[in-house]
Length: 140
Image 1 (cartoon, rainbow, N blue to C red):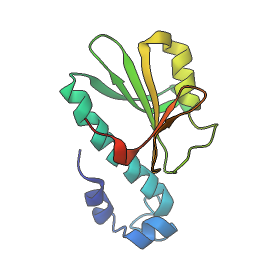
Image 2: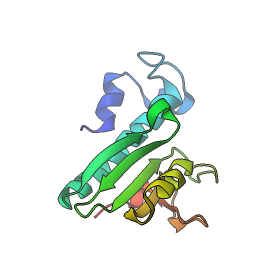
Image 3: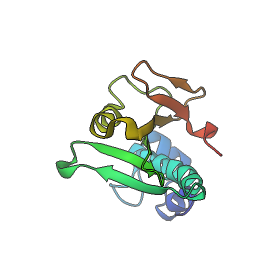
């Protein structure tokens, strides 16, 4: 794991390129797509050390054919799971979190927490039970 700023620099993505969605060293890495990937990397960089300190394993979950994908799955030694989706938005839409709801349906009470990490300012819990937490508020 490395700071996403290093990846941005190596891809020759500056602030304007990331925010406006233009240019870049490759079409795949250019613009908003790269910004979302870098934001997800930063979220992983924040979550993974906390999981390791708790002796939990961290995974990325992608179901066959990509129908369901969960950005971060943290599984503790007792089998309890915290699942995270990372969204490059201040407020996720009601549809976002579908994979977290799907995972809840698959593993039931083993899911201790379902969280959408955002760029927003305030943390809150949605009616579907999913927590929305700004990346800036994550920490031990």
